[in-house]
Amino acid sequence: MRTILTIILLMAAGIVYGQTSPQITVSTEKVKVNGEVMLVHKVKGGETLFSISRAYNVAIEEIVRRNESLKAGLKEGSTIYIPSAADRQTVPAPVKEARPAAGAPDMNSGKTGNTAASGKSWGKTLGERLKIGGLAGKKGKGGTVLPSGYDTKQYSKKKHTVKWYEKIEDVAAKYKVPVDAIVELNSLETTAIKKKQVLYIPNDAFLMLMAQNAVQEEDQPAQEAVAEEVGTVGDVAEEEVAGIAFDGNVDLTYILPLNLKDTLGPNSSFMDFYAGAMLAVEKLSHTDNKVTANIVDQLMFSSIEELVASGAVYGKKTIIGPVRPADIEKVLEATDGKGIVISPMDQNSERLADGNPSFYQAPPAAKAQQKGIAELLASRCTASGNAVLIYEASGADTALVRTAKETLAAKGIAFSTLSYGILEGREILGKMSGYMKPETENLVLVLSNSEAFVSDVVRNLNLICTNPVEENRRSITLFGLPRWRNFETIEVDYFHRMNLHLSLPYFVDYTRENVKDFLMKYRALYNSEPTPFAFQGYDVTMHAYEILRGNAASIQSGTLQMNGLYTNDAGNGHTNTGTRNIMYNNDYTISVIE
Image 1 (cartoon, rainbow, N blue to C red):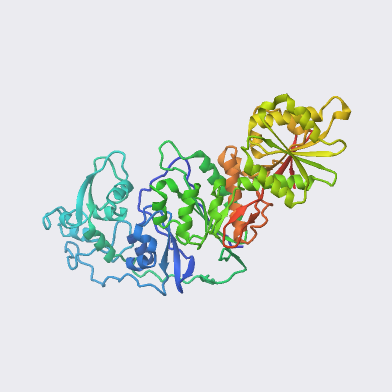
Image 2 (cartoon, helix red, strand yellow; image 1 turned 45 degrees about the vertical axis):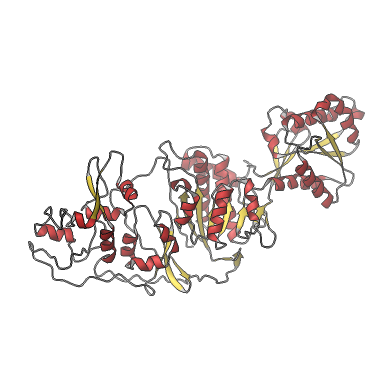
C-alpha cells in the first residue's frame, strides 16, 4: 500500500520564522500537461523563482513560460509546473576556472556563482573573492562596495533601517524583492535580522544578475525518472467526475478564512473545520490512494481576486471552499471546469449550480430539507393514515407550503390543510380537533419557522392527544422543521410525546462507532471537544473523496453528521439532498431513521 500524506499544520500559536533560507525539496511528482512531462512543485514560504530555478536546474524563463499564474507573482501555497529533465532548458553551467590563489581577486566576469542559501559553484561568491582581494568596503562606481562584493550604486535602490517589529520577510514584501536577494546583497549568514540593522535593498539590475547566474551544485547527479506511469491530461480512468478522471490521487485544496496573521489569534470556527478535515485526511491516507492536502488562508490575501491571481487554485483537482458564495463564484470562474469546487458550509450557495457542472453544494439547502420532511411523512403514511398540513394564514411560509404540497401530491398522498392566524388563540382548538380522525394515526406537518405560531400549534395538538376524555383523544405524530430545535419556549415533552420527526441537514448520532472513534482521536490530538464545524470539516472531506470516486449519489457510511445524496440536471452543478431524519422517542431519546 503506497500512501502519501502532506499536511500543513498551521497551529494557533502563530507562524515561526526560520533562521535560514528554506531548503527546497525537488519534487518527484509528475503530470503531463499539453504533451509535456512536468514536475509538480508546491511553493513554500521564503522560496523565490530564483531559488526554485536553481534547485531544479532550469531557467527562470522556462518556468514562467509554463505557468500563466506567475504573471501575478509567486505566492506561498501555490502550485507551479517545472519541466522535467527531458523537456527543459537548464541553467547554463559556469565555465570551469582555475581556483585563484589566496589574495588574488578574481574579477573576470563580475558574476557570482553562489548565494547565501544556494548550491555551490567552485567555492567562492563574488563577495568572497572581493574580500580576498581586500576590496570590500571600498568605493565602487559611485557607491560603496559591500562586504558581499556588490557596489551599492550599481545594485541597490534603497537603504532600509530595520524596525523592531520587522522580519526579513516583511522587508522583502515591502520592497517586492526576494528574501534570497536581500540575503545575498547584504552577505547575511541567516535570515535573522535585528532592530536598527541597515539593509541594502536590491534593484532590478541585481535581480537580473542573480537570475542569469543561478547554478546548481557542481557535479550534481541527474534526477532519476520516477518508475511509475505518468498520468496524461485527457486520459480516461475508471471513474470520471465532471469530466475529470479519477486516477487514485486525492488532491485536496482548502480555502478557508483562518486569519492566521491576526495577532489576536485565528478564527476558531474555521480552525475547528480545518482540524476535523485533517482527521479525515489522516483516515484517507490509510487507503490505497495518494492523498495530498493543501491549506490556503484566504485572509492572507487582500481580496479573492488576489488569491486567484496568485495561482493558488491553478491546476487543482478538488477545491473545498471558499465559504462565501460570491467568493466561490470567482474560484469557479478561475478553474473553468478543470477541477471540482465544493461549497463546504453555506446553504445559500445552491444558486451557483446553474451552468456549473463542476460545482458541488455540500450542505443540504433549505428546499432539500423542506422536501425531505414531506417525503418522510409520505413514507410513514399508511392507507388509513390522515395527513394534515398546518400553516400560518399570514402567508409568510408560502414557498415552504408549496414545496410540501407538491411533494405529497407527487407521492400520491391525500392531505387536508388548516391555516389560521396566531390571534385566533384558544378558539382554534375545536377547529383543529375536527381535523384529527379517531382510530387512526394523524400525521401532522406544521409548516412554519415562527416560534410563536409553532408554540401555539404544538400546545393545542398536545391538548388533543392528551384529552382526559378518551373518546375525544387522538393519536398524533408530529412533523416539523430543523429550526425548531433552537426554540426555547416550547416544552420538549410535547416533542417526545408526539414523536416529532425532523429532516435535518446535520445530526450527530453519538452511539455510532465511527463517531466514537472520531471523538477519541479529536480529544487526544487537540485536547478539546469537537464543535459542529469540526464534524463538518471531516464530512466535507469524506464527501470530496467519494465524489472523486464516483459515489456522489449515495454517501452515508463513514460520515459523522451529514449524508450525501448529490443530484443534478444536465449541464448544471450538483446539490446535496441527503438530509438526516430523526425521531423524538417517548423514552426521551432521539433516534436516527435509516
